[in-house]
Length: 583
Image (cartoon, rainbow, N blue to C red; front, top):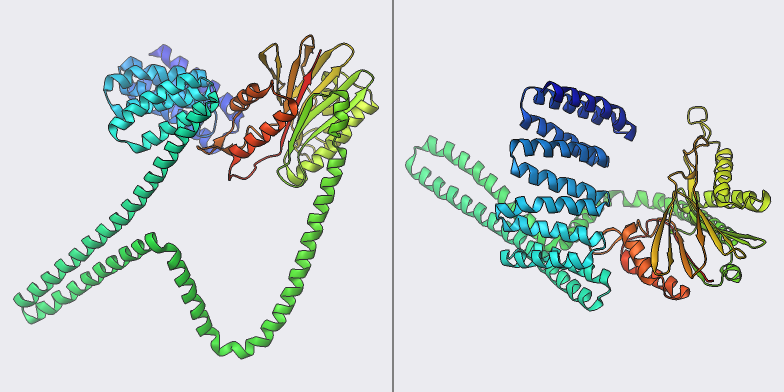
């Protein structure tokens, strides 16, 4: 036990140093430190159950604030204690929690591993609802991990159990999973079939919920009426059996109770009407309100008439002024959009350098924080995809700064190596925005840019890429390759010390397709489950279509985005550039 105490004291001091760097609120840090101390005391006292409870609380706090490593570390402590004490139910719950954390981190292989470990505990309990839940969790994790065929097997097993339980909510969930899995596999017939089943059950459950609400209100109303009738009967009996004074007293008491019951009936009636006729009720209330206001102010109508006319005239003048200002602002932004578009390379000119390519560019607002850039010198062609901090007008200002600084680095200073370009680009951005030291500059900003910078040497047939905060894909000989960029952005809070951008080289000795993109598409919410598109789905989608003609790919990407977004608003600017290099 003394050895365990030393270990946990060490864990306490290490976590107290590491986790505050994640910028937890001070109150949460203090709470976690208190839980750690209590956990150590409990283990020293031999109370493993209490220690597990404290570790579990710390795990959920870390999880709540997206500090996944802290959550997993503490859940593992709970798992260790549950194994030592033979607490099978505790092991099941914590294995599931760890799996869900890895799922939030998009580490789906680890999530699948822990879901599998929980299966034996669920199987031994013999609870069909828990077993169906397991199949649902496994199917979703497999689907997210690109194992759609395995996800279908798990989902079909869970669907069978859900039908046996007649649990339509679970049936709806499995239809949704099967729809997404078949969609990923490109089986449109099956995808449409399961989407139809999902939609029909969703509508049925919605109608059932509404009917249950109305029935519940009706039952509560009937119960209240019966209670009122019972009180009425009791009042009559009391009136016949008591003396006059007692009758009067009891009568008053009964009347109060009747009033209370009547009030309850009225309240339930209003709730029922609100559930069935909420739109009509709002209209009636509005009419009553208008009538009341007219009645109150009727006596002042004549005196207020001239004042209203004067106010209306002034209001009209003000509205005209506001409209004028608004139009001026919109005209200014539209003009800024034309200026911003003028700095973007003309796609037709780019195709003279690299014929087989496309650009999918979709700003969220009139002006954009995403932009692309190009230049050429001798045998070298340069293309960059840039995602600035923010969108709209703030992002557009950053894009103008970025375009100017890139021109200085490449066209004026003749820096051609992608690695050196990003270093010089970062230095000029820090200097321009005065981002030297947070403590010394009141004007310090954390604005910056994520950049993919590509150089193509047409003579040597070599592509060189450096990335700042971005990821890139390329396909060669039927294989997919992912290029993970450095974590450092250009500008922002990066500074100048310790900055490094790695250069990646691709020899064009066979047809090679390269994709450069911002994170707008991947972060868009949509689909049946109203979730993000996510990078894994985006990479799979690009891989599925990368061999098609480049102009056709742009249309496919446009259609996929519109289908996924649906009725949701576009959350960010979107930029995707595809380039096919031929031998």
